[in-house]
Image 1: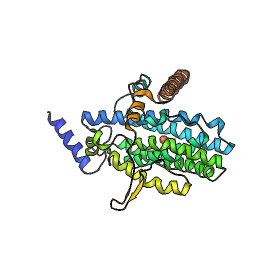
Image 2 (image 1 turned 90 degrees about the horizontal axis):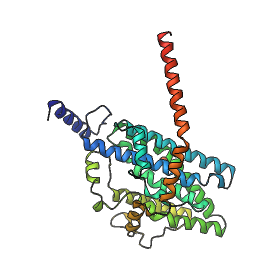
Image 3 (image 1 turned 180 degrees about the vertical axis):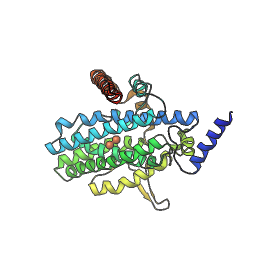
Image 4 (image 1 turned 90 degrees about the vertical axis):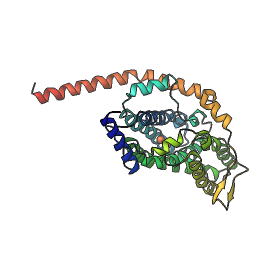
Length: 319
Ligand SMILES: [Fe+2]
Ligand SMILES: [Fe+2]
């Protein structure tokens, strides 16, 4: 090991110890860089793929106001994808390559987005439960040791809390509407509860990389701790909504000071992750189409950028 690498490593360890931030030009271990590229790009892919189930409801949202709100939310998710691709690029892998990994099926995205949004109430359940789980997961990431990732998360979390509230409000209205509307809200929660809890990843015992991510202070809490936090948060919220959560084992545990919850269907989780979910094929097909259809936009933007930088250079040199 050369002196320079050695001092780079020492400085890196010092930054982690001090709860300080690692920045793009700092030396970092290859495995740290690799872990971050994978995590941040998967996160970016999830934001972009996650636009699909909701965009599908923009034209069918029940009022102009709700259409406008949903459209803004879907645009926010696109913005989250852009912040995160930018953060991932600072680690040295170009965006084209990250995008290609998604299109080729080499990169993953959150398996929750392989479930369909069947009814308007599903848009409420996605906002309340999926964006809610995202917040629980992402608030601690605002303190992630890699600077660009942590800073992107601060902006993203602010918007996610609006998303959760709009979902909550959709469900509240339906839950307190007609019997059929109440039933629609309950049915949506019944379908999204399990997959939302699985968004935190496999149980700690089956999540071998978590320990290293926590040592590097990328991750601050384990999958099971975050899942527990989420369950503790949504139980009283479900009561306020007048809806039930589909888990007969859900009960307050006085001794632990937390809610106990039942075993999740991990066979289903791994099957969906492997591509056997209800919408995996449709989501990827749509993403590939959108990429093809966007080709001319990317070319036009690149041509425009080249032209403006030529004009700026000519102005500078007085040509
Ligand atoms: Fe998002
Ligand atoms: Fe969101």
